[in-house]
Image 1 (tube, rainbow, N blue to C red):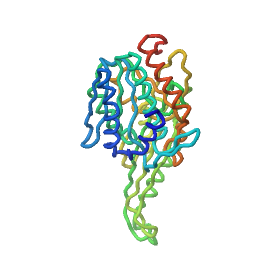
Image 2: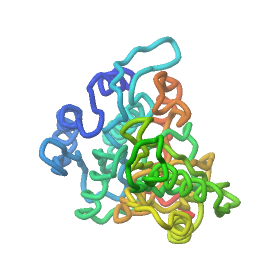
Image 3: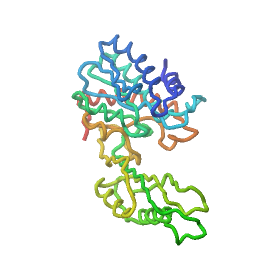
Length: 338
C-alpha cells in the first residue's frame, strides 16, 4: 500500500475507544513482514483482553516512532478528493501512523537500524496503552510522538486536569422549594466560583482555560433536584499541583473526582525544524520512560474530533520525509535536542 491507501485502510476500521482489537491486528499483520524481512521483532502488548499495543523494533532501539490507534466517536468511513483524505482518525492519528510506517519502511530499506514503532490503545480516554507500555519500556534515547501539529515540531503542550463534580440535595415538590435543597443550585454556585478563579498564564502556552463539558441533574423540571453533576476539563499551563489546588479551593462543598491529571510539557527543538506551540494534551507524559520526547505530525488539530475530519495529502507526504530526516538527525547526533 502507498501512504494514502494505508491511511484509508486504517480509517475504514472502526477503532473508537475501546474497540482497538481489529486495527491492532491489522497493524500487526502489516508490520510483521517488515520485522521478518529486516531482522526485527514484533509483539502484542496486552493492555486488556482484546486490546493490544503493537511494538516492533529492529535492534536495540535508539529512536522510536509512536502514536495511538484509537479514535473518538463516532466511526466515519474514509473518502478522498484531490487534496485531502477524510474520515474519523484521518488526522488524529491514522494519517500520522501511515506516514510513520512509510518513513520506517524507507529507513529500513536504506539499512538504518536501531529503530522502533509503538502503536498504543486508549489515548483518547485515559492513556491506558501508554501507561502499560511505560511499565515495560526498553532503553530508548528518543521518542517521536505523532499528533496533528501541521508538521511543525511542538515546543510545548498544555496539560489537562479533568474533574467530575457532584452535588447532593434534598428532593421535594417544586412548588414548595423551602422543603428541599437544590443540588443544581449548589452545583451552579460551585461552577460559578470555578469560572471566577484567577488562573495562571504562561508566556509560551497562554491562558489556563476551563470547559464545562457536561451537566446532568434531575429527574424533572417540577422537582427540586437531589443530585446534580458536571464534568470539567481545565487546560493547564503552569504547575499542575497549583492548578489543582486552585480548583479544589473553588469547589469546596461539593464532591470532586479527578479523572485526568496530565502536566504541561516543555519539549525539545531540533536545529533545522520549524516549531509551534500546541494547546492539547498527548500520551508523552505517560511515556516518560521512552526517552527524550519530540512531538510532530501532519494534519491540523482544528479538524480533529469533528464531523469533517480530514488531512491534506501533501502533508502526509511531507511528514514521511520529515520523520525520515528527524530519525537520521537524532541517530547521527546532528542537530541534537535542546
